[in-house]
Length: 146
Image 1 (cartoon, rainbow, N blue to C red):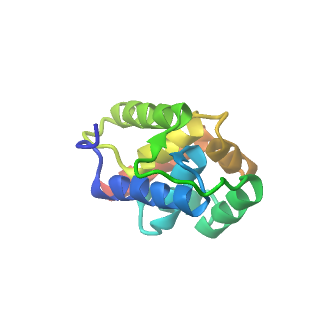
Image 2 (cartoon, one colour):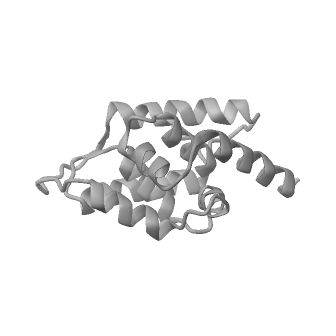
């Protein structure tokens, strides 16, 4: 499943697991994926967010305001919630739409936005980030890279 992920995207998922543990959870959900994406300030996802006027620190502050802390009993393997699994599925779909052979942080970001009922998507919308402007920024970003 993870072999099509870029190194940065894999690292974002690893960071998401760390964020879940830090928040006392025994699962990884959309808010943890968003926090994991925000930790790598050199990623395409963060570049897109910054172009949309959102700084990584504001993401962390907003998630922490809205999240309830878990009981701290974390197991060895943190499983993805159904919403987080959908984020991964959506990231694959977004990569296909952008004709990309890999799944990057930018695709994970779009996946979080598409899973609109998850806390990650709600936080992004509260900060003024919607999916269509994010897709346009990604397309523009890719054109600048070409």
